[in-house]
Length: 376
Image 1 (cartoon, rainbow, N blue to C red):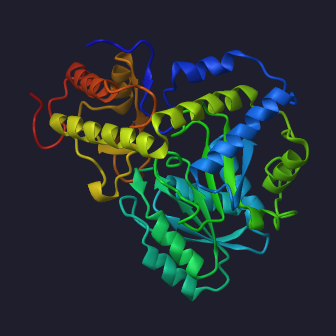
Image 2: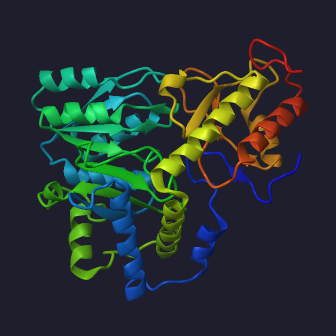
């Protein structure tokens, strides 16, 4: 097989970026320079446009990984006497609950198995039963297993009860439609190194303007105070503290390519095509997906590990990596699995190439039994 010129990342982020995006990082920028401030302003405007939130919301960028922005959103939007309901069907939902504990925010979880969707009816009952709940923090695409949660239906339930919805859309923003004109939310959190195909290093929170205006003093953190970041940016056009200048410039170029490609519909369509090709190719090798297709997000797919006693993930990972592809370990607690991402800039040959690399790795390891049938 022909090896890629550089490893292809089949992960939920960081992911493979385009040459044009990488080239954008070859110039240095002054953090307070007017030209750089224009880039920041453009990124804020474009991300708002993707969510159709120009008239109702504000985009507040934040340094750090996506988790920094999730924590910033919880700390800024949830007052100190607030109460957060966290529907929990995976590792990233559990992380939100951990953030609430660290911030001293009262919270409760609504627990599901890792292969089940959150149900809007359950959220409805939980909110009806407890009037003290002020916020719902929902993970849109739970990439612990790859579950796509029914955001719009849950958002309507939360709005019906007059509560606030915070969406962790880290792995869905830009690929799966989130429309502020149709789906009510107070905040959606995303990051540079995911479906917009930038590089990691910054997140952003799209917040309802009328809500953000009431958040002064909520945050227990100086660095992660989204209200203060927003107020300072509006007053000066600058970041409060040293920005990740190269990351912002790369995201600006990545968003330009996103628009040229055709926006959310085209990006989501490409990922859905990748997902179908991946599942079909892996099924031909005997691999079984962990999730029911009805709840599978086109972002990352969890596969059961081979039944063969010769299987070892570290060896498997290394053999696939030798052939130019980087996989991701499983996140499940009860079963041995691994995950393969469907997102990133790697062209139509990427997924078939990955499947071929996996087939080769199995042969090298002497694995003839993936599930119920032997490999040819």
